[in-house]
Each structure stands twice: as C-alpha cells, then as structure tokens.
Length: 344
Image (cartoon, helix red, strand yellow):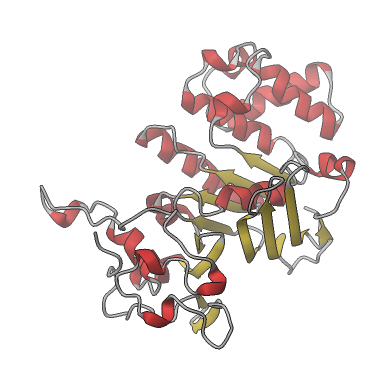
C-alpha cells in the first residue's frame, strides 16, 4: 500500500466537491453541492439516499469519469494526498485499476460483451502489473477463484452473457482486485442480484476490506446493505450530505427527518402481517434550492416556517451534533423517537 499521504492519513479525502451540469441556454443543475468526507484504510463508508441524490455522480467525479463537455467539477479529491481533480487523463488511467477501482451497478453493461472474461481480466494485469502469457492466465484464474467463481479455468474462456448475474458481478470484483487497489468504490453492486447472491457479494467485499486494508466506499439505497457492511454512513439528499454518523448510532437514533423517513419505510419482520408501510411522501424532485432553506422541507411533516426561507442570509449548514455526528437540519428529530420522520 502506498503511503503518499502518510500511514495515519485517509486514503480518500473529498472536500467541498461540486458538480454542475449545464447545457447551452438551460438552467444549471447542481448534482453535487459541497460534499466532503474521508475514508481511512480498512474502513467502509456508505453514501446513502434515494435515486437522484448525487451518490453516483460523486463516485464518478472521484474517479474522473465524468464527461468534459457541459460538466463543471470543483473542490478537492485526494488519493493518499495526491490531488485528482485537474489531473490529466494519462495520470488518471495509471491510477484507475491499480490504485483505485470501481465496481459498477450493472455488470452486463460494464463488461465488454464481445470479449471473453479471461481476456478482460488479463488486460488489467498486463496494463498495471506487466504480466503476460501463461503467468497472466494463471493469475486471472486465481482471481476468479478468490471471488468464488466455480471452475474458473473454464469461465476464463466464456463471454459475459454466458455467466449469471452473480458471476458477472464477481468477475467485475475480480478485475477490481487484480492490483490490490488502495480505494474501491462499489456503486450499487447488489441491486440486480437475488438475496442469497447479495449476501455472498457483501461477504466478499467485507473480507477484502479486512484482509487488505482497502478503503471501501459503498454507494447504495439499501439500508440492509448499510447495516451489514458500513462503519460510517453519510446520508445524501439533493446533492448534499444531510447527516453523517457511525452506523449503529445512525440506526439507533436518526436525527434528520429524511433519515428517519428512510428507516421508517423499511419493512420490519416484527411488524406483523399486513402492517402498512410508511413511505416518504412526494418524490426527490419536490425540492427547493439549498440557498432558500432545507431542500427536504417540501416533503417533511415536521418542517416549520423557517425551514422554507433563508435565515440571516445563510444556508442550512452541516453542523456537529455531538458524538461524531454531523447534521444539516434546523429542527432535528428527538432521540426519543428513533424512527419518526416523514409520513404519507
């Protein structure tokens, strides 16, 4: 593991990351609006929120995978102290796959359908580790075996469509592990998988973090994944982090009404048959600019008048709430009501 930023420092340090999309003649869209977080070696950090909250855009900006045209990215993204924003394509290509890797949501569209699995894994080994020929094939076979793909030698000669969804996802993870990256970003890696395969993939990622000290960023909307894998959780809404806390503390006493609403909407095994679900009313599009108040206020049943307007000309800021928690809310939930939140 490299130690550019020092052994005690974070592997990934994101500060005030902002991503703005804008087409000519149209109003700009602020997909990510001042996001900051850090990930230490061997730590798993979760980015949680509904679709459209900015999770995936944050990960793509971190990896330098956003298009150049019509996109403006600012802030700071450091990998072991090395600034990535503004780095050239050549520098980023050397880092991707070797020092930082990403597991995408849909393995079928992420893998090349016209090239065998073996060729795609060997390509990573040749590019970043200089391995060729039989040595590369043996290493590729060992990687597939490590991630639990049965009969790995035969699978090397197969194409992505010949593998099940779970095995395709494992193949992607094998490619990500090929160079023992210091940072791994997993963007909804279990969304299209059945529950049994989900558990196997999460166990694989957990072993990776514990065994190699890799820093893992888990992007998901599945709170079950968060509960079983993450050490620290950042809840995102409308491009900003609205609450951050240790996993156990977040589940035990959510303070932001949005976090409480997410937890209240999860079906419970002890709720009894026929117990109604408690969804968050409205949709993620029902929002206001952060400069005018809390973006979640139009959907929040505990919002007051000052949630919908500017206060002293300032925005709703992310502030320390004690015990390592940060919160962006003027009227947070009380710890006495751990699952209270938005109601239909």
